[in-house]
Amino acid sequence: MDKAKIRDLYTDYLLSSLGKTTATGLSRLLDKLVSHDQITRFISTLETGSKELWKEVKSLVRAHETEDGCLIFDDTIIEKAYTDENDIMCWHWDHSKKENVKGINLLNVTYHSGGTVVSDAATKLAALRVPIDYAVVHKTVRFCEMKTKKEKRQSPITKNEILREMLARAIVNQLKFKYVLADSWFSSADNMRFIQKKEKIFIFDMKSNRLVMDEKLDRNKGQWTNLETFKLTENTPTKVWIKDLDFSVLVCKQVFINKDGSAGVRFLVSNDLNLSADYFTTLYKKRWSVEEYHKSLKQNAGIGQSPTRTVQTQSAHLFSSILAYVKLERLKLCRKLNHFALKAKIYLAANKAAWEEVQKINFQPTA
Image 1 (tube, rainbow, N blue to C red):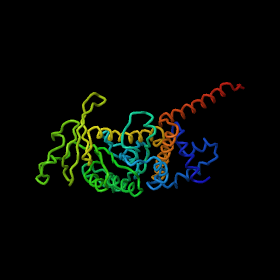
Image 2: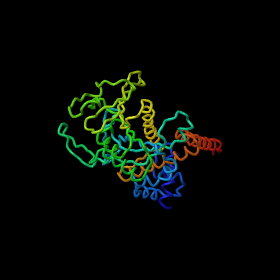
Image 3: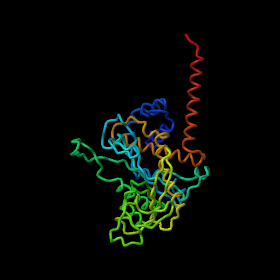
């Protein structure tokens, strides 16, 4: 059986599985039509990476891309506390938990067709939300931390550098898009300058300790102040200079209520000097779709359900999970059901099959 067919079977297995996914498990599911060794060889030799992903999603993207599409950057960690450490399975800082966790750090860029957010459910289901590029963080550089005297790992390339490489590839691939969205971890001056030169529009969250000054002042006189203490009116876009940038930007302060009832403040920044407060909010809401992508990868596509232990096999499983997500996205567009509704249908069918098997066993005569 050729690799393409095995890959198709493996991604279907990830979507249908209710637990751990293994070569043995898939072989047994197929009544050994495909042997354990065939599946193992497939995982051990599968080519993965940006080029391979673009080949898979190109036709889907071309059918739905729009001039005002969005590229959304973010990363996630597939936690694996008990798996042996290697160059990709290692310790990473989780800013949501404020602690180091062990696992695989995956940097993604997803494409969201259309530049506006509409609350209508049918419209949401019609919008394309698909990964077009990704990178696994490889921490190949080892060093001894002087303070703790412990060996640590780091990547030879930063996530911001990876972001710019991904953005450059999207432009080379002639992808239609207008906006680039990301949280504060990617709002570096280098990224802003790069996007400005590519004549695209960025909308980033920005940390409150960034240095800014009024756009009307002479930026060369050094009258910088922290964004947190800078006088901004809520929901009123204001032109400012940001330190280390040679062009002015628009900043919009937003106050919101967290789930625990506490108040939070967000500072959004864009190089579109004509952006209204409503459009700041409307466009940045699309960034949430990458979080939904990560959630679907973990809950619907089995990205964390493989016991693989080498860099190659872990990378192959991860890539296969991304392809499984793309399958769900195709199904979403034609069936008008979101990923979790589709997965629920799979669960229900599995439960019915299990129920029927239990009934057969119950009614079998005993010796």
